[in-house]
Image 1 (cartoon, one colour):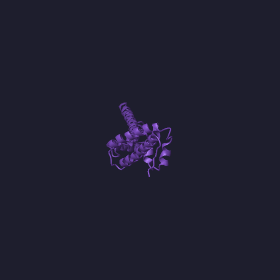
Image 2 (image 1 turned 180 degrees about the horizontal axis):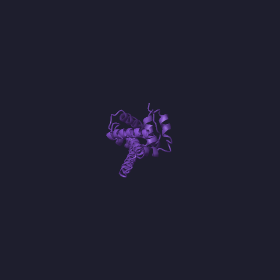
Image 3 (image 1 turned 90 degrees about the vertical axis):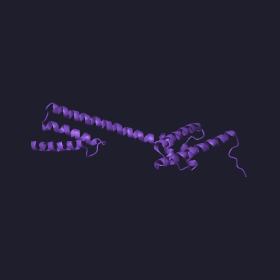
Image 4 (image 1 turned 180 degrees about the vertical axis):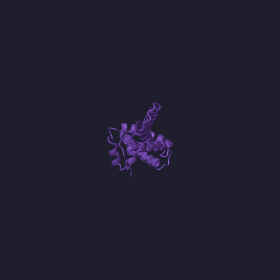
Length: 180
């Protein structure tokens, strides 16, 4: 006994599109798992994921009248592909691109902290060049510089500049206590 899924060409096209959408979602889920398990390189992952996202966007725009909700399609066919839904529907970009943006934000923050360190260093140097050598004048400037150096996560904790700065602050703090 043979069961026909379609009765005309239009219906056949619809089922083929459903099959294609199903395949894209399943393939994306497998790709996400492979990437998380480090089975494929980030470069391979990004290339393949961008292809799948492009295919998905093209197909879902074609099916927007028939499949108004990808989540409902996912649930109707009991797909169990949460990573694919996240990547295709929610994020829309490969994880490598998503995390690169976060790293860029971190680099921007780091650049701001470096600028703050430079500013505090120049201010401290200028005050010393202007012969402002009183403890109550130098101590706050070096404290600011030490604080900004501590914020800079790219420097190791035992960085020589940080340790020297802590030594000088400790010395100057003793003088501040003696003066008060």
